[in-house]
Length: 257
Image (spheres, rainbow, N blue to C red):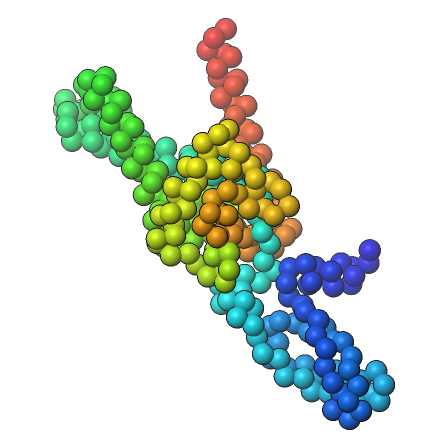
């Protein structure tokens, strides 16, 4: 396929072009033209009488929303790119929850005069009763994870992990940013998707690219970054994840030798 044909096909694939039937102003014959959904007017030459017809185009609601939300060249995101974005979100959550838990430990137990040094933080953590520590860890992890996803998705429609990969959560009907209430409901729907071996999440790997929680809440995860740039960043992020996993495996093997 030649480069012009690829560009032409991509315009239809990503929803930038549409076909429409018009009548010639001179001979009144009908013929088909192809126009961009982002243009307000176009000029087309009649194939019979060669009259140049001026065509006024009215943007559809969806095309206006695509333009307003910067979703030009919109593509739906499947399972793997979502999984990579979620991995980075988990790393951020663990770091934030660790900082919060250490802060709680210091506030309750103090640092025994060591201040905010490694020894002071370690002393504060060791001073906890095991049951109290376990309860606090679970409480901080649950609350921190819930607030992290709800605040980011409710406020801007994307978490830091999704920002990194160029993903955005939008309404499935009009492509607007989802509301705080829908972001809240989507969190509980995600828990349903994860109940049985994450089957609800794996559904996004198929042609519709919709997970179970997307069906329940009528949402879409779209990629608003250019295809080539999006692929490059995806593979870089995936490579970094593999590097982390290999490093952990090597450390584990060395410790147990």
